[in-house]
Length: 268
Figure 1 (cartoon, one colour):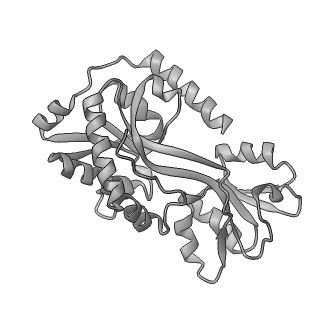
Figure 2 (cartoon, one colour):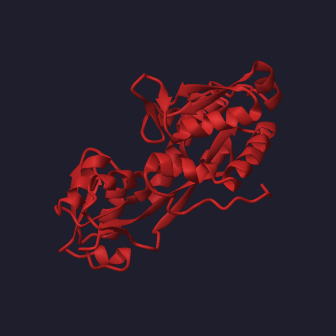
């Protein structure tokens, strides 16, 4: 997780240096305008991406529309690449940011967060052909781990499982295919993002080791000090979690339940 934190620290320094702080729209401003501007990643399926009709679709889109409905305003989805999430909030180009925004201490210096929307679980995805009970069992030269070029978890694996072999491909689908075809033994990553692709191999007996390596909590980002909007979103999120809307929507788009669910609390 150290690499993730370092990356966030670098991003915060860059944002502080390059972005002027603009006055954020308050909850009253948004309601008067009748529109909430929601930052979503245009290239991050199944969270959000352009569908067949060139319109946004995905988990974040369903959540964003539900939030707008609860606020009685219209959702305006703004394409926001991963590095743009914090700068767009700081410069008031968006009112809220989705897109798997992990809560970190460094980002909290520039923006505020709601309660968690969902989790990212670093764990082990493997098959019944691999006889292991914990992730450290993979630190053996007889095991090959599948991953993607450029992922921070590649370096993490080299540091924490130095004896294992690595086989790197370019996308999530190919990573899962390596394990399904027996060319790799396991995936050590944020496994939620990979589960949908296991459905392409119904004859494979997939398994996720029960003990997570790490659980990160992703929230909705708002501009620093925009407490009226943050509190409104927290109330809405409590209702969406309590009704199971968040978990049902996650299963709809990811093809499997959230590995670690968010437990709703009436207290912020």
